[in-house]
Image 1 (cartoon, helix red, strand yellow):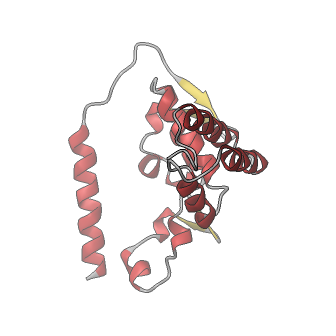
Image 2 (cartoon, helix red, strand yellow):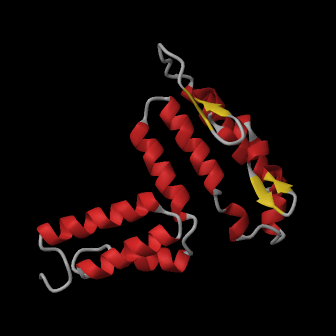
Length: 173
């Protein structure tokens, strides 16, 4: 049963990829570099074109994620977490395709992998209107800086300034 389900899922994914068919072509070549290699729009999708870039740790690669391994309990949530390097590569592909804002989003996501899930949820809740004082938000920004997440820290500082201007800080309601 697991093999049949896995085959069906792979078939559906393949059909969806084949159905896309419309690749945007740019008049000038766009490339960016990573520490390991040059990443271009031709590298998309990474899982299909460069599965060797995806490392699950413990000597396992993407091919380890099968329905049999899922059903047997050999796959954990940690195996399914995306790595910062893949997020950065995805961002470089977006930038190479002329989508700078998407590249920034992937860079921010790569930074967020440095924050525990529990703390990330706490930060998310703190960023909701009327939940935090300006100082509490600035403390979060400083924490993010300390974790090596300057893009996220800047985002939180901007939120603190905007919340102050729009009267969305704790105690303003």
